[in-house]
Picture 1: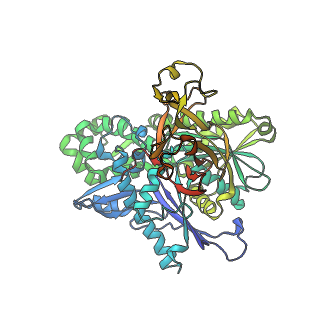
Picture 2 (picture 1 turned 180 degrees about the vertical axis):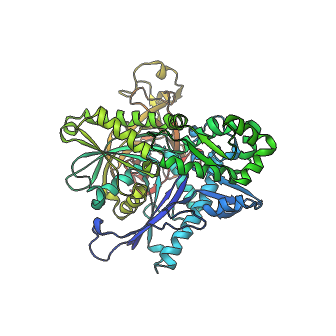
Picture 3 (picture 1 turned 45 degrees about the vertical axis):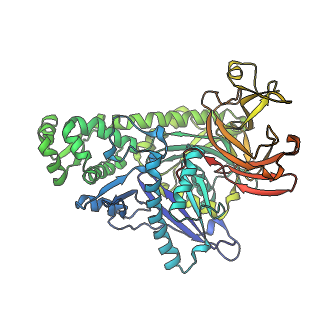
Amino acid sequence: MTHRVVAAIDFGTHGSGFAWAVLPAGADIPGERQIDYPDQWDDAPVTYPKNLSALFLDPDGADRHWGYSARRAGAAGEPGRLEHGFKMWLRTEDREPGLSQGNGLVGTPEQAVPLIAAYLRRLREAALERIVTGGGFLESDIRWCLTVPAIWEPEERNLMREAARQAGFPAHDRGRLLLVTEPEAATVYCAQDAAGIGGLGSLATLVVDCGGGTVDIAAYRSRTDGSLEQLHPPKGGKLGSNYINRRFQLQVLAPRLGREAFKALEAAPAQLLELMDAFERVKTSFRGDGDSVVRIPISLKASRIIDPHGGSERLAAEQQGVDDHIVIEPDVMRGLFQGTIDPLVQLVSTEIHKLLADPAVAADGLRVVLVGGFAQSPYVQSRLGRHIEQEFPGGVQLMIPPNPSRAVLGGAVHYACRPEVVHSRRAANTYAVEISARRKFGGVLRESGALRELTITKVKGKGAFRDGVLDPLVLMGDSVQVGSELTYSLVPLSSDQRELRVALYAVPQVTDLTVKTPGARLLGSVVVDLSESLHRAVEQRTVDLYFTFGGTEIGVAVVNPRTQARRDTVVEFVGVPD
């Protein structure tokens, strides 16, 4: 199918948006693509390419409002509840202690998927209104591209595809719904948008994508044909701007209002979100080099909520009589940033050192490109800029595109136009299949405790096998060309086995690979139907699996060598809701 339109969806922790472009009938030149970034949303206070990532659910659980309209409904006292921050629920290790369910920062993947699906459905409808109703195209003309954090594992990416499927996107067709990591999209944007930073050129580029929930870092270099090769596996962490908001709540709001008043404010998420929006405005403009205090106004509605619990009285006692604002001293404000900015700067510095260890990179120089909504913060820019100047004088340059908040969206559009712009990626883990191996399985394991811990299965006439051995397909750090397939042949243990369940594991190391290796985790499995060769000798029941690891997602196909029949299938991921 020829795609006449490409559309990108950037679903973020704090804000989400879409962008799209029409592909010309003739030659498609990246620099000439006209990308539309809708930036007007109902009830939004300013024009911005992202709507608020929030839903207002009625008492029956149906999503009545979305975006900024959801916040308005909550503030107006409509019956129901406001939900926000649910993107971070997909990754359970991102939960923070000390926070209750009511503040929109705590939840499970099972709770997140239907909420994300409901929000994506609204975003899809807004995009279709613009592209189909307004532009005159057919929905079938559209190829979609959905962005995901680079630090997400295959499980979380698969949950996002499942949410997109529930939202009505053509998720079953991986050619019509692509996934791309956020820093990779930003890298593509920088490479294609010569008017912004002048393209990537031949320099190695470290893209630092600072969002609301996560910071993702990825390094790329342009090849002679213009495609991109990834230099190291992506790094990152929960260093987004929302964690500064959390510290504001836990280190400033809660102590100054008192426990009961703060809990009452948490139970009124619309008023809490309104206050947090006010903090967001001063946070994004905070420079960190002055002595002026920061003042966050408290609305009349918020005051009425905290007053019965002594909140205003306690606030006045804490702030020398001021009870209608939260007054934050400069040192306190810098302290709120410190827990995020210090590890962010250190993480970037570590990655720069790794890249400069390559003599070719050190000789040519390195560029650090700062993108994402949080990249607009003057404090982030100045702290990172000063560190690079002091730590790497002359060899590293920091660049910020004119519209850093658009970089991921625009890059996802460019990527959807030409996914082959990414030539190769680095494996973030070792990916391996679980096998039953003969007790002297050469090369995979040393005679270690990990090996001795495995159970042994004895097969009549075949000998003894160790269960739980992991045979690697790709080693962590390997460069894998996009679209390349890795063949793996398997045979069942018996002639009467009707199916073969192939378990796929991710392991954060490259040696001593078993299911008991520290950090090894089951991603999911592929079920292979063996009924066609039932009762044949096991040697005649071989099946070939073709794994594709170079893409944003893991692909797999099963081939019967006896019939040459090929079946593209999927990894049945653990924990994916029905």
